[in-house]
Amino acid sequence: MVQEALTNTLKHAGPAASAAVRLDWTPDALVVTVTDDGAGRGTTDGRGNGLAGMRERLSAVGGTLEAGPREEGGFAVVARLPYGEVRR
Image (cartoon, rainbow, N blue to C red; front, top):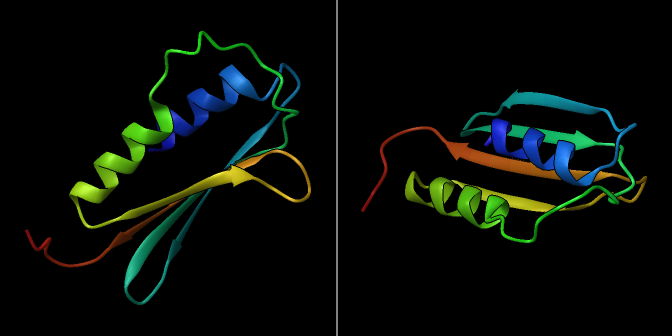
């Protein structure tokens, strides 16, 4: 998830963007947040499945993904990975 979110920053946030990765251990889950301060004007080939793929992989282990523009500019990807066994 982190690798894909950082790749998306490189592809979409523009050449002067920076990114940050934050890990938060809550009582019931690990929350991973990747943010950038980009303008969203980078290049893309339009063939990517980055966010959908991340969402699928996290769902497979009982996790969730939220992604979208930040109020202060840039973009955020937030993954929540619950502790414990995955129920199928």
